[in-house]
Structures are given as structure tokens and as C-alpha cells.
Amino acid sequence: MSLMDKVKEAAMNQFIEVIEWLDESKDTLLYRFPVYQQEIKNGAQLIVRESQAAVFVFEGQVADVFAPGRYTVEGGNTPILSKLGAWKYGFNSPIKAEVYFVNTKQFTDMKWGTSNPIMLRDTDFGIVRLRAFGAYSLRVADPAAFIKEVAGTNAHFQTEDIDGQLKRAIVSEFSDAIGEMKIPALDLAAQYKELGEAIRGTINQDFSGYGLEVTKFYVENISLPPEVEAAMDKRASMGALGDAQKYMQFQAADALRDAAQNEGGGAGLGAGLGAGFAVGGQMANAFGAGQPVGQQAGGGAAPATVACPACGKQNNPTAKFCADCGGKMEVAQVPCVKCGAKLREGAKFCSECGSSQEKQKCSNADCGAELAAGAKFCAECGTKVPDAA
Image (cartoon, rainbow, N blue to C red; front, side, top):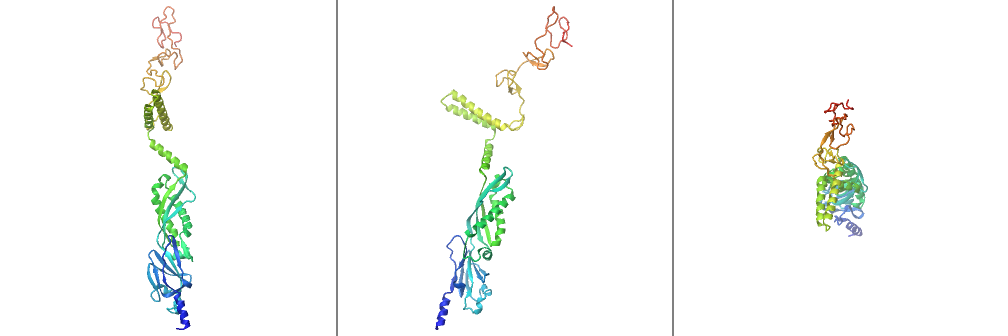
């Protein structure tokens, strides 16, 4: 063997004979196989594993994409050979090409979240600010497009290299979707799945141009500002409280129980009852303050009340004694001595005409009989009453 033949054999031994990639990382999207001077020996073995794709790039252009399998790179049986020009010197000459391995598996548990609150017009709370976060899964759907549009000539491309751009696109689509769907803030928790599917569909329309696909999209939480959450808690408390009248009875029952346990005996009982009725009464008034006059909390018409003849306190019309002063509510009525209006017994003046209610007597000195109310003449002697018309 001549010296020139030995040199050729040594050079040929430098050419790559097995092309494969064992991925030991968890976040590598693309890996460029190191080929000595980009020269691949004729007859080299190409091994593409599951969840991988091998892309040959010749003179800056994607020449061919290989799916999982074992291939022999030689003339006549490899599609790439019809696109590469290096074989014109013979099958023993090397081809000059770059080999990229693209990871086509799903990259799971990739996080997203809103860096700033999203302004939203809500039907219950007006304008609110929302924050949200979640996770998504990503994979390379088109290896050739991914190399052309994203990776370029990078020898090693990881998820973190595109993570920022993906998050910004996701937040933009999330803001647009939640605004268009017009879901009330109180109902958002029940729409996480539907919201995630809607956002995934719109995101994939944008990512398809990059050769990427979002396979799963999850909305884990949408939070409201603290003041809105406090208002929601207050509304929930009011709903749980229910009937104010029952709450007042509950307060009175608690007061009785506490008083029974109080060593002070009767004094404790009175104080406990007073506290229970006072708090219950305040709650009942608070719940009934916004209702129209004449209506109860239940929505029915309130019964008419009558004033106590002694103190004027309003009482139930069926009450026999005043709840405030204890006076008798049933009072006999007598006619006014002048106009005949109905007055309570013992009234000194008429509430209609103002006349004194002292009994008038006949002006005839020899008669002096008492006159009936409204009489124009004395029933005893016939003398005319001076003030009668």
C-alpha cells in the first residue's frame, strides 16, 4: 500500500459511521450532531429513536427528515441522496451535511402566569383585576419548520430558550379569551376546563407557524383582588345567615344557655337575655331597613298598628295592653259635647273642634239640668241653648 493510500484510509476513518443521539436531558428540543468537517461516510448508519426526528441540512437548506428507524446512508436507497450533490464523485466519497436531532416528545409541566393583573369588566363587581397561572404541555409537531423558524443554526436548543416568548403569547391569548367569553368572576372556577380548551385552540393557531403544538393547557387558578374576595366572603356570610327572625331566636337561645352556665344566677340570666335580644333586634332591623314600609322581610303586607292611648307607642292591633307602658289598649269612646266626634272617655277637650268636654247645664236658673251633646234646647224646661245655631 502506497503512502497516499494510507493517508486516504486514515482520512476515511475520521468520517462518522454511526449517527445517533442519546438524550440525557429533560428539556432539549434540538441537538446538532457533531460531524467532523460536516462529512458523512458513504454507508454510515443513521439511528433515529422513538420521540426523535433526524433532519439533514445541506448547503443551508433542509434536505430530508427521517422518522424513527434505522437507515443506511448510501447511494440509491436513501431519499436524501437525490437532493445532495456530493455523491457525484462516487459512492466512496463523503457527503457534506449537517445532522440535527429534534426531540418530538411532549414537554410537560411547563408553567405560565400573568405578570400583571388583567383588567376585566364583571357583571357583579364592575371592573376587577384578575391574576391567573397554570401549566401546559408542548411538543415539536413539524421538525423542519421548527429549524427554519426558531432554532436556526443553534447547536443546542432548550425549552428555556423559547419559554419567555411562549409565556407572553399564552398570556396575550388568555387575556383575549377571558374577555370575549364574558364569564362572571363568581363562575370562573366552574369554567377552567372550557377556558383552557378555548385558549389552547387559539394558541396553536399562532404556534403552528413555528412547528410547535400545545397538547395540553391547564388553568390552575384565577384569583381576584383581596377587597373583591372580602366582598364575596361577606355576600356568602349573608346568604348563610338566612332568616333574620330565626337568627334573633338563635341569639336568644344562646343567651339562655350562657346565662344558665353563669354563676351570677338571675343577674346573669337577665344580662344574657338582654344581650341576645339586643343583638337579634339589631340584625332584624338591619335586614329590614332596605324594605318598603308596610312590608315584612318575608315579602307579605305588615299588619296595621294602633297607638297606646296613654303613651302613644305603636302596638299590635290585637294587643290588650301596651308593650311599652302596660296601659290598657281598649278605651271606651264618648261623643264630643259640641260636634259629636268620638273621643276617649275622660278627654277634657275635643281633638276635632277643641271644645271643652265639661257637661253644659241649662241657662235657666230655676232648671239647671245637664244638656245632651249637641242639644239646642233644654230637655227639661225648653230653654234655648245660648250657643246653639
